[in-house]
Length: 430
Image (cartoon, rainbow, N blue to C red):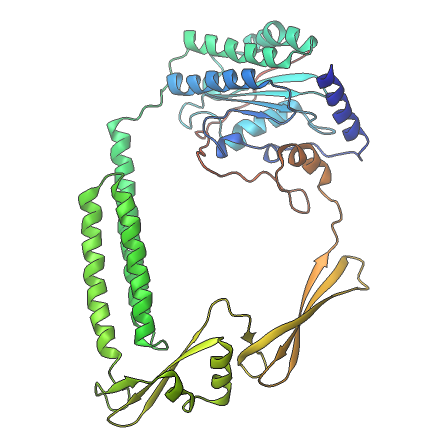
């Protein structure tokens, strides 16, 4: 009784809203993108947990045993002017339910407000699940339970009827983890390792050739890069390809040793007289060789300066490195990293589209100039609210202005096989 009242309240809240456009397949959350073991998108929240588990297990078994992919979707409504047949076909094609080769997929779609059930079949299942049989499954295995409000049993019974039919009459490609797939996976993995090694070689060479940075600083950067790679490689060894990854480590370490040696020599070489006579100055000695702006940056801790002087010709080399996390920013007027934020204020706008303007105020401690940065916040016009209310609020998803759609991804994610269909199946009611 409570479940019925909750459902009626949900429908009343939808009817109170302005007329909504028909849903498209892109508006429906594809649960496969989040978890490859899930085949049910229960947007209407009408399936009990125990039945949900059994439905997922049945559809998982169909995929593993026969290579057939199925998905169950429940919706409070498909929107005004929407066709359940077009929506189901859009889901089948858009999600690619079924094998790309065999097109062995089906979609079971339930719309509560129109009291309709649609079983949409892919090209490869039209012979095993003809329209007449799909109609019988809806009428005899699902509708009687739906009329009593027992949606969980009705959906489970319909899925089981499809499984029984496919098991008795369909010979499809099963999903296996054969040696051929393992070899392909290993080849892809090794290819990624080679690509990673090449990328790291380029990155290390780029760090080495960055003449604007002091050799000591470039050496630190190389140290971080090589440590990161070795750590990742050691973790990857757990999954196999030990000799291949070990060879990659040897190549990277050899390149690292060469570049580190050259940087150690470059750190001593004077750019003016080309003698290895450069000496690093202490914090006290280097201040007199910095400009007033650089001295201020050094005191504020916004830029660290490394200063070296040649014992042979007296030439001075200065290298500045911006300190990460410093509250001081670069002043657009004088270029000194001495500009700090002094306040914020919220401004009104005469433009009705703008809710407010958030202004950050800055002051440069070197040139004494004031600056500001404006961030305009626009009003939400509410477009796309209805679609978001039906799906986004139920699932806790995030929809942007103008509607938006479900964004998949996450741990254990997968997807369907790329199947398609041409409108086969049946529609029934209760």
